[in-house]
Image (cartoon, rainbow, N blue to C red):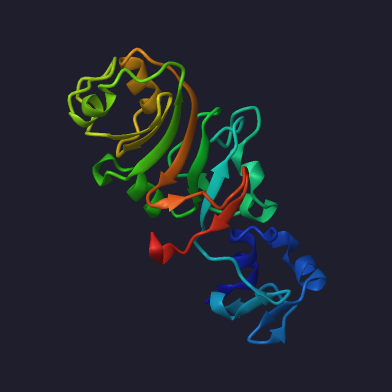
Length: 227
């Protein structure tokens, strides 16, 4: 158990100093009894706010990132976190992206305030699957599938070859590419290696989660036990 104002503050509903006012302006029930004292000791599962349970203590979100948004807390410009409700933005610890997508790359990205999960899914040892839809400036030459699967591609500036990647051709300028690494600008650098250029990049899937049912900028909450 912990103080109600501590829950409200850590989950982003209000600051601890604002908790008393929050309890007056909202119907907060603990075991079906309304409470007004922010120091009341409660269990997370016993609290309802305006008939809704408290947000999860550790939140995991999948978002369909639009182009033009930055995966950062500090950079200038449109930040990916601005697409979330203010309550989520105010959580402590902060919600962060699991990995990053470039400003012009769209698609599936996970966000969480669960540091252990973030580390798990960004660890190079975990081989987390990512699938990208890649639009190319020039038609495929025809040997890219075998080349990327060979495990022999060494990108400029790297000293180790990439792990095998799986390419599925959709048409001469459009492919789906499955990789298990997350090197800097990896997909763009892979096609640059073949003499081609990526003109549009969309991540279809990350760690088994897809954004097919989400419009640009939309998100949904994931269940932690399914990750």
